[in-house]
Image: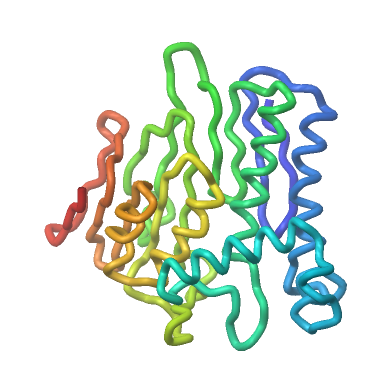
Length: 257
């Protein structure tokens, strides 16, 4: 059973290995609809846009909006400004919202009794339980140079994984310190117990450049697989690769433990 939902400019899919009530699935998907309505920077009537225009005071905004902005501000400080909630003067929480909403939806499913599932929001995913007895969830990392090829397949078990890259939308991740497009990495994949953390860190590491993977692992204990445009790969933190699915990086690979 794999219901899908179109929202937030992407496709959300739920791979359920044990059936869950339709009402519970609908409530999980509604989390994404609410997040889009509340946080879209492209909707003039969204709560985020109203705060950005100073039509709504932050103190009067919803708990959800204040929580997301607080998360973004915390990572902005931690990254020395590489991650930022603003670009060209506009308030934009997209670097936080998708991971935050997906994690909330996954928690709602678990709290409602769902057990063995993978919730995937445009490549950012949360796994719970197992896909089958004596198996663990696995996820492939797309090769940013070739969409038909995988860099490798990671064994996740129960975890969260987020990827940031420029291979679909072009250069759209900016270094908040300079305001310029970040180009050192081709893609960043982060694995962490919490998708909110993984998603924000994937953007922050991409923006930070060469120091990013080691910084994220040291400061947050996550694992990072970073791909360079030349095919080189940097790994920071422990990563378990599926058998015969280990990346074959360029000779310039560096590994950080």
